[in-house]
Length: 182
Image 1 (cartoon, rainbow, N blue to C red):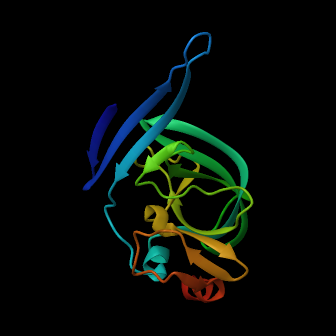
Image 2: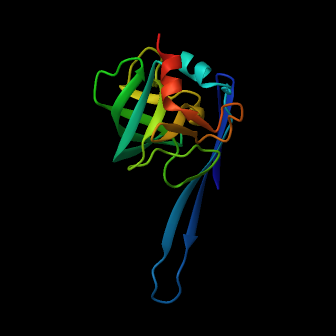
C-alpha cells in the first residue's frame, strides 16, 4: 500500500493507493483491480447556502454531458467533467458548458464526495480553479467541496453532503435563487 500526506493551507489530505491483484491458477491469467483510497478534511465547513453563495463566483443549474477525464496531481486523482449550464443563478458563465474538477475518480473510496453523473441535474456553487495562484485553468471547483453540490428534482434541491449537517436536507431552488440575486 502506497500512501502520502499533503498539508497545505491549514487543511490536510491523506491519500493512499491500494492495488489488489487477483492471481489465477493453471492457465488462467491474472487480473488486477486498482482502487484509490482518499482521506480528507476540509479547511472550512459551511453552515448555510447563503454562506456558500457569498464564497461562490458562479451558482448554476448544471447537467453533466458524460464527457470526463481523470488526471493526477501529486498522486491525488481528480475527475474533470464537462457540464452543460442550464441556468445561471449567480454570476456569469462565458460558455454554455463548463469543466468541473472534483476530487476522486470512479475507482476512489474513502472521504470523497460523490461525483456528478450523466442524466442528473444539479445546483452547483462554484469557484474558478487555479493550480498556480493567479493563473486561470478554465475549470471550476465546487465551493466547500461536497457542500457546494445539490441534486435537483423539479424545484427541490437535495443536499448530497453528509459533512454539512447545518445545511437543510432539502431546499427550494427558487428560494435559494431569490436569496442569491443582488
